[in-house]
Length: 124
Image 1 (cartoon, rainbow, N blue to C red):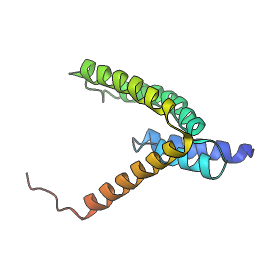
Image 2 (cartoon, rainbow, N blue to C red):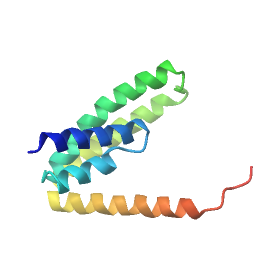
Image 3 (cartoon, helix red, strand yellow):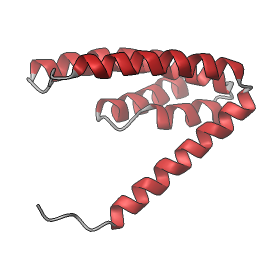
Image 4 (tube, rainbow, N blue to C red):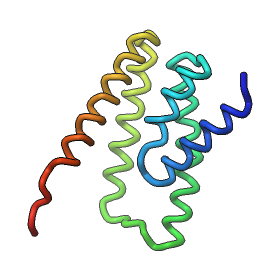
């Protein structure tokens, strides 16, 4: 495996993750297509890198007083519950089906982003 590509893809994912754009939406396709990783392995790697990026992002945002804690317990509870359910569901699926579902998810994100570009802003 090309260590340069691994570091470069991690860097790209980290930049987008740090900006809050979801580094995994780039990292997963990059490492499955260019490095030949299995879909489940790629998603597992993404989750580990997300955890590290989230810790650093949380520390930076906290230092800059950009964290709102009101109602955070509900978000954490929902996140933990859906993570457990999603992880169990993902282990039951084959890598091919998981890859197709992820591709469909990326298509939905692309369509949503495209629609938002042309949507007129609401006057407040």
